[in-house]
Structures are given as structure tokens and as C-alpha cells.
Image 1 (cartoon, one colour):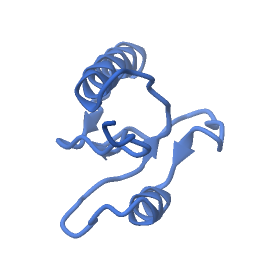
Image 2: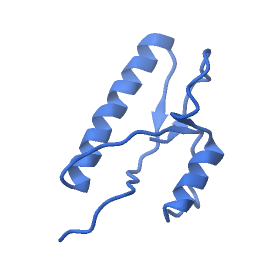
Image 3: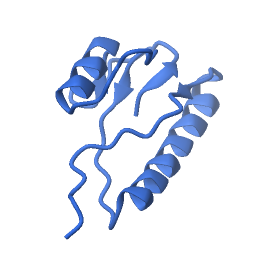
Length: 94
């Protein structure tokens, strides 16, 4: 989950979860994604298990919605995810 805008956290975030903007770009390039024109300010790593890429995108959207609500209620700041779905480890259909 990468963000166009995210408030600066007051408390440290676990380094295993939070990715800086350069970490996100590096991860995307390593997975074969084109990062040209992608403007983001960092992101969060998480895994989603599902039967197909569409249900994975739906599950990820639900997680993103919960994160947006928690941030807006807890900090009164806005968090804006990028408007793309980027999935890795998607198995080929058999």
C-alpha cells in the first residue's frame, strides 16, 4: 500500500512494516513494476491471501479503508493511497 499523502507519524513505526518512498520504489522495481510517473511518499507492507488477483485487490481495498479511517480519527489528518493496484506473487492460472 503506497500513499500520495500521509501525515508524519509521532511515534516510531516498526521498520518491518513501513517503507520510505525510496524503499517503495526499490521494491516495485525489484518486482518488475514501472515506477515512472508514480508519485508516492512511502507505504506499508502487508500480505493478502485470496483465490485470485481481483479478490486480493478487494481485500486490500478493505484494509486501506480501515487504515484511512483509523488515521483520520486518531490524528485528524488525511491519508491518501495511490490510485493503483500493484500485486506481486500472483500465481499463473493452471
